[in-house]
Image (cartoon, rainbow, N blue to C red; front, side, top):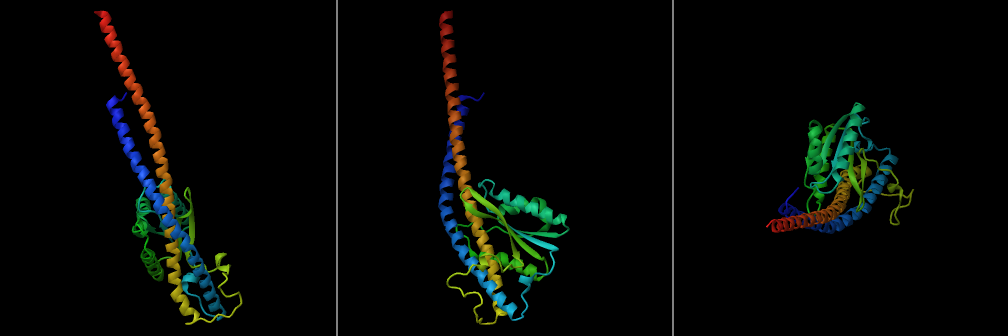
Length: 299
């Protein structure tokens, strides 16, 4: 049974831990608001970029032009590159673990199909966890996404590496695995295809009031092929940047929830330890009184 001094030290230690978790919860809450605003602000731009890409590619097809390899692919799916986005820091519950589990699931499924799998990790936690098991297929990693404000240059760096590998014939298909922010207590593990670029989709078919109506004649300057060559790398960078923002917002939400639970658990532990301390102290006092009374009766 622990002594009174041990219990008192334990209570002091847990109180200090509760102060830390409470402070981290408030910091995560303040960062969450900024991250959520950034993630939501990036969504319309990404959708508009997708619609513009579809418009230009449709014009190129109408002109009997050839679409770039980034849109048509290599015609095979023998080699798949997985871009896994996690966080640089921990203490955010199952946020990183859920992405890593899904990545492992995808790797096993693709390898069972006889396909070559390669990994590129964005985030220190995912890199460290996956490197233990899949160091041989990991081609690169970045761990600069835990900054106060996520820089667009990080997405450009990732896409630059991926495009270089694609042009060298390093893979046929590229997919992103990341946590999409839904709410403070909910993040959805999402898998999106990055390459070949899918210009269609529901978002691409929703015309805004300022866009040309379907069937309208659009004049491109320069020609559609040159525009696609310029737009495609930027489109891919925007998609990666949007995924990074979604992941960061989800990370802050998960950390806020985890620190709130830790603070509550610390409070419960302090209550239990305080009760145990009071009982032990009362038992010690009672024991001393009994010894004094027994000694007086003996005299």
